[in-house]
Length: 89
Image (tube, rainbow, N blue to C red; front, side, top):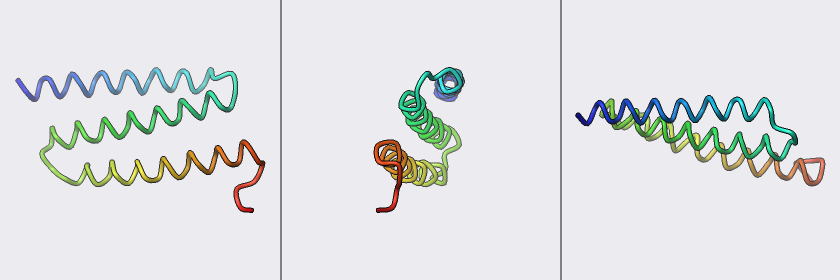
């Protein structure tokens, strides 16, 4: 029963990722696209965590942590680029 629920949760997260992809392609401004990318990496973290629970391994938790750190740093870098036009001062 628990495995069936986890599969359903993974299907919903994949659906959310597909809807994010549509929003990314339709985004009217770069700021909107940046927000969609943030949502996509958060959804990918959730997908990895749920799959890690499903597979009963800790490898996916470490991958999710790595994606979280890289996602935060890349969001800060892109925001700085959008505001100032350069990343390195």
